Amino acid sequence: MNDVAPTPALLAPLVPGSGSEADERRRQGLRRMKAVALSLLLLSAVVYVVTLRGDGVVIGYVNAGAGAAMVGAIADWFAVTALFRRPLGLPIPHTALIPNRKAALGLSLQEFVTDNFLSEQIVRDRMRSAQVSMRIGRWLADPLHSERVVTEGSKIVREALVRVKDEDVAALVVEAIIPRLLEESLSPVAGQLLGEVVRDGAHHGLVDLGLAELHRWLVENESSIGEMIAERAPWWTPVWLDERVGDRLQREAVSFVKDVRGDPDHRARQALDNFLLELSEDLQHDPDTIARAERLKRRVLAQPQVATTTVSLWNALRRALVESLGDADGPLRRRSVAEVTAFARRLTDEPALRDRLDGFLADAAAYLISNYGDEIATIISDTVDRWDGKEAARRIELHVGRDLQFIRINGTVVGGLAGVVIHALASLA
View 1 (cartoon, rainbow, N blue to C red):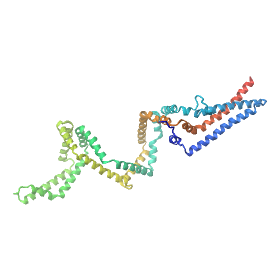
View 2: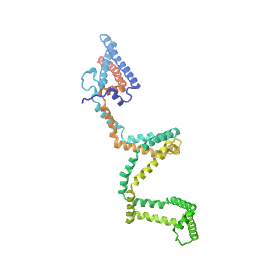
View 3: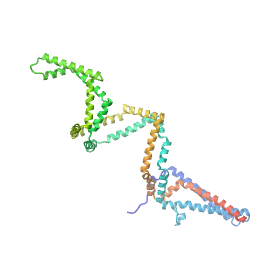
C-alpha cells in the first residue's frame, strides 16, 4: 500500500488554531514583516548600485554600509529560510531543517519538556504556588457554582447507575464476591469487629430499639399471649386458669422488658454483653466455633437466593438514588448543594485544610509525573512524527515566522553598521 501524506485538513486538528481567524492574522503579520525585510534588502541593493561609482568620503561610507547590509540581509534570509524550506529550491545541504528533521525535532522537544517541565519537584512547587484549593473554595462559594457542580455530578451518577445491568451485578456477585468470601476466613474478622462494637457500646442503640419494639408488641397484643397459652394448655385445665396464666405471663413479660429497657445496667444487658464478648473471643480463637461459623457461611453463600437478593437490593437502592438525583428540588440534591457550599467555606476559612488538600494534589501530580512523565512527554514526539513535514514547517513558520523576520531586519542594519566600521578601519590603515 502506498504511503499517503496527511492532507492539510487531516493535519489541521494536530495544530492549535489551524484554519482559524488567529491563523489569518498571523499570516497577514508574516507577510507584512517579510515585505519590510525584503524592502530593506532592496533598498540596500539600490543604494549600493547608485553609490558604486560615486566619489567622496561620504559616498564611500554609504557604499560600504549598503554592501555590507546586503550581505547581512542575504545571509540572514538564507538562515531563516533554511529552517523551513530549501532556499530558491536548491538542494543545499543542511537546509529545510524542520521538514527533514521533524522526528529529531520532536524528540528534542520531548526531552526539553521532560527535563525542564515534567520534573517532580517543579510540579510540586507549581501545585503549591497555584493555591488550587483556595481557587476551588472561592469558585464553589458561589451558590450558583455549587448548584451547577451538583447538577452535573447528578447527571453523571444517574447515567452511570442506569447503565449498570442486573446481569453484570449478578455476575460480579457470583464470579467475584462469593468465591472471594468462600476463600477468606471471615470468623476472626467478624469476631474482632463484634468485640470492638461491644466494647465501644455501639450496639446499645440497636438493643434499645429492639426492647422498645418488643415492649410495644407485648402491650398491643395482650390477647395473643392468652391465645398461645390456651392452644398449648392440657385439655383438662379450665379456661379461667388458662386466662389467668396468660394474663400473668403477659404482665411479667411487659414488666421485665420495661425494667431492662429503663435500666442501662440491668443484669440482662450485662449478660448479653458478656455473651457477645465471649462469642467474639470464640470466633477469633476457638477452633470449634470458627469451624461452625465457616460452615454456616458456606451454607448461606451456597444458596442461589444470595445473588438474587443482592440484585434486588441493588435495584431498590439504584431506583431510590436515580429518583432522588433526578429531583432538582429533592432533599438529596438540596443537601448535596449545602454540603458543597459548606466545604467551600471551609476551604476559604481553614488554612490547615487547604494545606492538606494542596499537599494531596501535589503528591498526586508528583506521582503521575514520576511514574508516567515519560509516557506523557511521548505525546509530543508521536504527534510531531505524524505531521507531514512540509505542512508542519508551514504551520510552525506561521506561528514564529513573523518574529524571525526581525533577524533579517537586524541582520540588514547590523551588517550595514559593520560595513561602515570596516570601511572606516580600512581608511585609517
